[in-house]
Amino acid sequence: MTANECNTSETHARAVAEAKERMPDENLVYDLSDMFKVLSDSTRLKILWSMDGGEICVCGIAEVVGMSVSATSHQLRMLKQMKLVKSRRKGKNIYYSLDDSHVNTVLKVAMEHLTE
Image 1: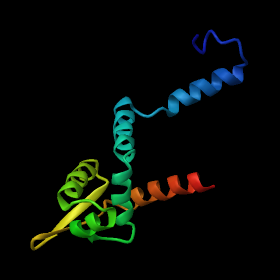
Image 2 (image 1 turned 30 degrees about the vertical axis):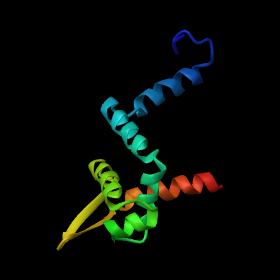
Image 3 (image 1 turned 180 degrees about the horizontal axis):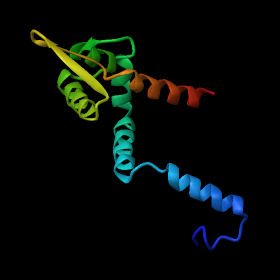
Image 4 (image 1 turned 180 degrees about the vertical axis):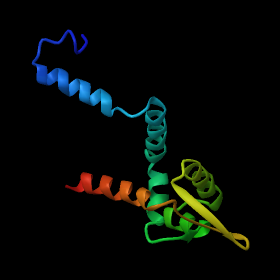
């Protein structure tokens, strides 16, 4: 059944039309879905939370989340590809931080939602 076949009020039809106007571009929806897939892994969420206080080296992240540096680096590459984290090199060490304040906001709002 489509909105045109629906036997409800004109208010319903208007709400449907407005919802269609607000719908993001299809490619953006797919990108958002991919981001949520990356965020659906508890290990990657722990890695992101380890950066809540600011920049931290990969070996520090590995220690916080209880993983090897190699396994942590693998997860960090995925987070970096999704533009959730950024890195900088200082000598042999690589330091990671949240890409921008939006990542922190997403995490905090989701946590707030769960704990209400």
